[in-house]
Image (cartoon, rainbow, N blue to C red):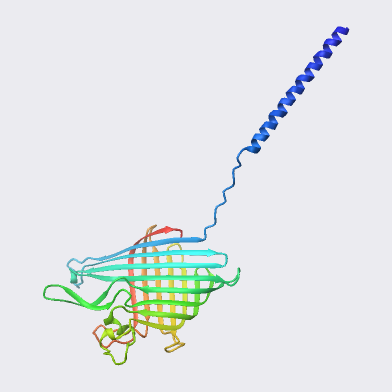
Length: 340
């Protein structure tokens, strides 16, 4: 009996040592795993950096064509081609904003009545930049510095005549920076909604440029000296400075999924010449009809009134102040890069 008790005690003691040894092994393995886990490289969460810029560009390719066969009422075969780019880069961070827009357009016209002549139908080079700083976080008002530069790429002619050799020549009307306009104003803007902006710059410096001497008188340039010949274009300055106030209103909206409308109105008054009267008016309108993903119909109009610009009538009468108006309707292929 004593022998059996001794054997049982020895067996229990051995079992206890085995269990303890297993517990120690498990604890050791757990400790080693925890140490290895703590030393493992930690995966850091990637935080996407905020983007303060929004950039996009709209490319337009417009084409119109007319063809006549035995058309009793007459007319001429014709074709019009127009290329356009509307590029935007806008910055916004905290209270500061900076908007930039570059518009470029050029068009050609061919008509059967002037078979060997390619005429210009559209020409625009315009850059706008405005820096703004909000008066407060919740305010719709901001202090602004506004810059606008506007001109065209190439020379324009009218009153074409054909010589005995069949060569066409016309009367020069305008050219690169002839005229050219640049305004820089300080003021405030009211932006009540993303689709509307009103900017008033009570202190605006305006420059009108004319690099072609023979056109300077017609674009309001002043004589260098009163004793010089007023019929000689070289007798006039190549630029004119005006100090005044400018009001600029922009509206861009989608009437529905098909129709879009954009308009810009710019009014300028010259403190040095007839102050508190809008001496210069520019009113641009763009109406678009979306036909497909990349196809749209576009109707663009431009209205200008500038009292210092003198324009002759169609019959070549004496130049005088006139309202200028241009309209262009086109069938466009449109492609957008970036997020509008």
